Length: 553
Image (cartoon, rainbow, N blue to C red; front, side):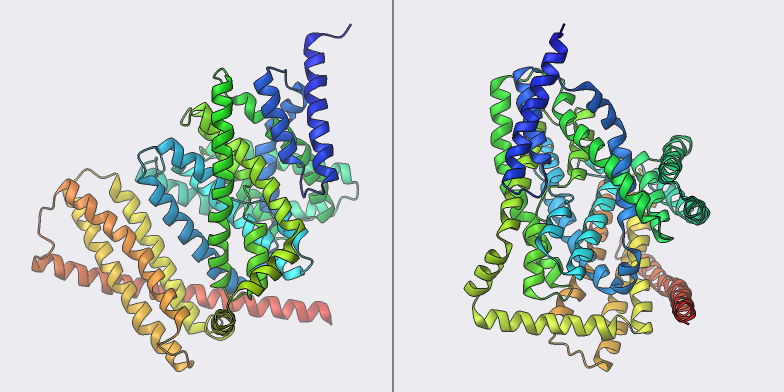
């Protein structure tokens, strides 16, 4: 005899199957929006979910993060690292700026729900939009970097309140433990990869990989680090050494099933009673979120890809196809619901946004050639000429300046300086002592002076030597965005100083002397570390070239 639960499962799966069939017939890139809509409708109608599939979804988060780490094309990243660094720098700069603008909004839950819709993307749409191997590889890399960015923000508690919600000491511990863990797992992954390659049976390889995944989950619990961060680092460590492709494809199949369960389980995570009013409000929010997220993500990616030297066609393909809400956005929504940070209507809104946004991007991808041609034909010819000129200039910059050892050394100095400043600012935010806020502010002032010297003196001299003039549009943007990155924590330090009070005035000779001493010491220290990093990278590149020649022989 058929039970009521079994009948509910049958109706639930029938609804999901019908919507999936419609999406498949319409040549949608993915059927996940259909599953989300089916689950949302089922939750509203009070239908029982298909429990076996939902139970399998418990592995979805870990598998999703693990596969993302494995998917990184390390060879492509090494070949195009300069372009990828520029693109990631601009994308994350624009994204964080938007996040902090949203942070000023009174309605924190609303801003957090919207952040979840733009934090990451699904690369499947870009893979469907283009057959160009470079664009496909670049879309995969962008998506992996966005996912790692989302994992990092989740790990530091950013989505708890649109700001870092763990103490400065905890941030230091998180970063130090992450670096130590990365080094340890890279060594471990080398031996694990050899073990997997030595086995011919595919099922044994899969079981070993799942055992490795379970080891990472247990390790995260033992060392008190976020599970997503540890699992991602573990997957990335395997990718660095080149993990077995057959096993990766098999794990992706498992992940697809788990992901379907995860997507269909999300509406059932909502504890509140789902009334028609809440459902309709969620539907309205979903429509708004999906359209705004598409516009915001496409603008961010258009700017980031253009400023990394890509031509107009490639920029349009990448920005339009990656203007979707990825599964890591759903992961953020899941965390927000679990912590009861956002109300039911906003949680529903983010889920509807996922379904509507992916449907919209599917329609765009199906007409990509027409849309790209339409935009090109409507763009004024003078603007296209100007964009080509800037793109060629950026490409030349990547080809000449960023491959110059001296320039790379200056970039390393700047990266070290920025990382140091943000760590110091994070620690200072959690100090209630006025003397500590005062000292941190002076050090950050010194770092700002050091950054100005590196950007406007050392880099400018080298670029002028390489025939890059001061009238360059790209260099103007690059200089001021670099200073913007340093200026933001400086202003945060000043706000903290105003809040706690200063034992000595900043205009006092002692303060000025300490600022200049800090600047000199930071310049010396960063130069020393950057020189070591530059020489290490050069040795590895030489070694890699020799190994390739040896394999060729």
